[in-house]
Length: 501
Ligand code: ZN
Image: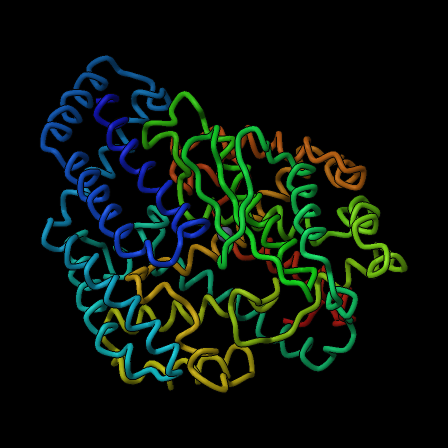
């Protein structure tokens, strides 16, 4: 079984290496040939993994483990459990449906690019309608409890349900919408002018690498390169790639993108190496993955303790731009809030409202209560309701994200799951090791990283996201810790009474 799983893993890694190269160094004309190679590797991996022999081996192994009364937490029992779950999902998607999904995704991507070029929804409309039909078919094939959206969500966040997301989001909305309104009336209370100067690109690059090294990214087991859209990908815990983008007139973009991807990378570098070629050695869910990136980007990188340590380092790189500033002023600048149109540029307070909007619309589209043609108007309506602003055009509205064009329905909520878990994990780490903030102020990130290694990273996919969260924090995924953190931090920064929201 392990040999078969390793083969599937090797095919997926080869595909990932080609994907990394595609976005970093491949010349643009290479795209068509690369897409064909990747399609072949994907098909081979799917065929190998859904081979009926894997199903037979799984049944035999499960019976043998049960007869031997094996410890359910042992590598063997966990591996059989995790592979069984993935296998039964994979075999439910017929080769015909898999091919149709992949074909619709490439058409969808081209239509989305054309629509963006024209700043019109119409060129994307038919491709999106086709993708939605296939997503409904996919939900039926995968099976679900209450809502077809459950099946789509489960692909990225195992066991999370639509009803649970609705409950969490309602609670968050109740707290965040009034807070955003209150802050919107005092936007000038925080100034981020120091971040909007000219910053030499090479010096910015070196600074991102210094920050990555400081938090514990191991450059002997990873590297950073440039891309248009920052991402992290891993070929093994010994080879983890991050990317970032440098903007010459803005300090924050490259720096925080790099810390964010660095957080993903620390998780990948900390996964159990002896299980690397099995599904058990992989990250457990997108939400848990995002919790690691958000923890380092926001809870650490946007804290006052961090800037007490890191400002002198940044000042050495940029004496003219940052020489006169203080850790407090830097802390304020990197935490400026403003309702804006673009999700990926959103601050900690408004970000989740962008996700809620997408979740509401996805659910309505999948259940059919919102026709595709009504999407742009519904987007504008929700934007006004949640953030109090109306997008001036489609590129800054409904066409901004690539996800829907790729058939990634059920994916967006994992970003908010990550934001909530980041706070829950950080709080649990500090409760267990109260010296963590002091250590950060001295530039020592190892107490925090060690806690994450032993409570999150080393477990790979051994526990479900819910079990992992309960074991690490003592409770389930929840909105309250995040809301308390946001109210406390931004209440103080903006002079908004803590009771707002
Ligand atoms: Zn991320």
